[in-house]
Amino acid sequence: MGLFSCIAGSREGSMSKCILAVGPHPDDVEGGMGGTAIKLSRMGYEVHVVDLTNGEPTPHGSPEIRRTEWEKASAILELKSREVLDLPNRYLMDTIEARIKLAEVIRRRRPDMLFIPWWEDAHPDHIQATKIAEAARFYAKFTKTNMAGAPWYTPRIFYYICSHLVTYMEPAFIFDVSDTHDDKMRACRAYESQFAYDEQRWNDVSGLFSSYGRYYGELIGTRYGEPFAAREKLGLLDLKDVI
Image 1: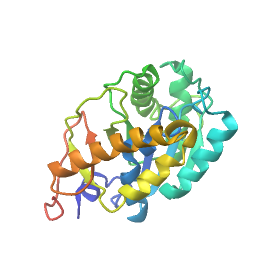
Image 2: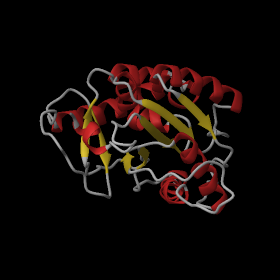
Image 3: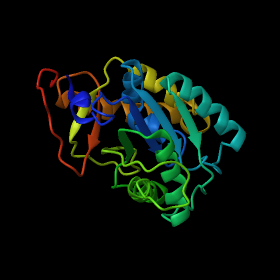
């Protein structure tokens, strides 16, 4: 029984199978935890993604281009589902409306774990996405409400790094993604309008993602790793899978 098995058993005593990753924009989940998403999908978890905005407008994109890109990336990530909410890119704010929209997704998906952006960032949308997701986790358990779906409280919430700051996250754990890093990079490159509109742009982006991956992998003795933070303490039932 490994780390994820130990901390996620909440469905009437069974092993957790449902993950919901929240992105401010399409491409953030890929860049921050794409290798982990692929690995968890292949381990048998149901991995869902919800993006709060469609990421437009951007200099090289359009709503139609972005949809094509996230559909291609989602196939590479082997997701169970992906949905994109209609909240405004660039002007994303932690409002009651935004909390309710995401809370209804949580109530419908009933995840055992939420993955959301790390709380330190230069991008206002990313900071607001963290606040929205933390509040939506709480809102999702409300009774006597007009929200769609039955009450649900996600037992665990983790934070992935998709920061516009060149900074270091103090991780609660690092997931070994040595065997899925190349697929993660394919998923990232699917966002040509954002990450690969010319060769220099792709060299810069891929170099950054790979450098972070190698650094965090080195900390746990593997080739590539993805870090995750937690505000709450983690417990283990077994040590056999700890690297």
